[in-house]
Image 1 (cartoon, helix red, strand yellow):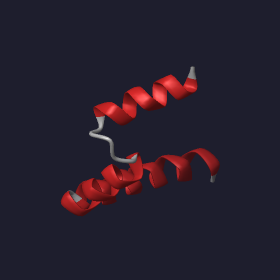
Image 2: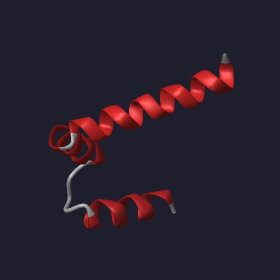
Image 3: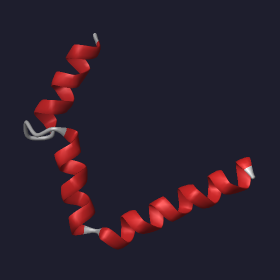
Image 4: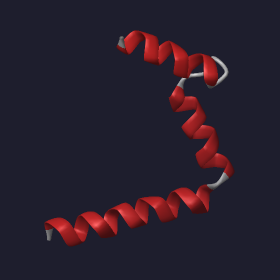
Length: 49
C-alpha cells in the first residue's frame, strides 16, 4: 500500500524525487524557507526550553 502511494506521488510530481523538488523550491524561494525554519525553531524553543 505504501508503494502505491509513493508511485502516485512520484507520477504527480513529474517523476522527480521529492528531495529534488524541495531543493528547487529552496533555491527559488530562499526567504520563505528561512522564515519557515525560523518559525519551527521558535515553536520548538518555546515547547522544550
